Length: 102
Image 1 (cartoon, one colour):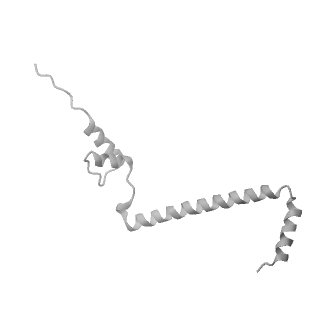
Image 2 (tube, rainbow, N blue to C red):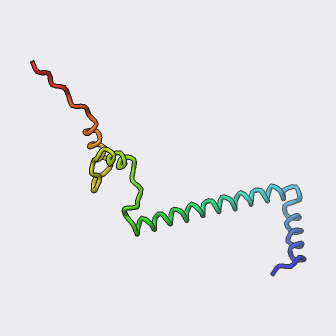
Image 3 (spheres, rainbow, N blue to C red):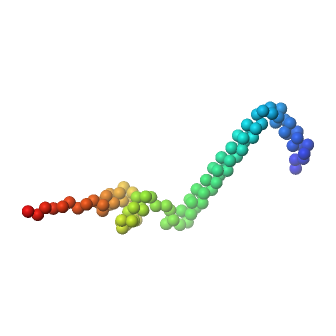
């Protein structure tokens, strides 16, 4: 365990190395660095959980906007790429050409 004397000694060395005027700036930069580290750590944990979930439950993976739109239009999305789905969406939304009868 670090005692009071050791802490005072460490603080004194830091003041000698950086100077009293640089300490607030150093503390701010260390605080922002720790904050960025925690933020990145939390994001990586979330990504890892999503990846693990997708491995255990492949149907839980997120659908693309194209897939969602195709489903809303009643198009079967299984085994189709987004490009194929886009073609089918376009075909289903085109207006039929009117044929004039003489």
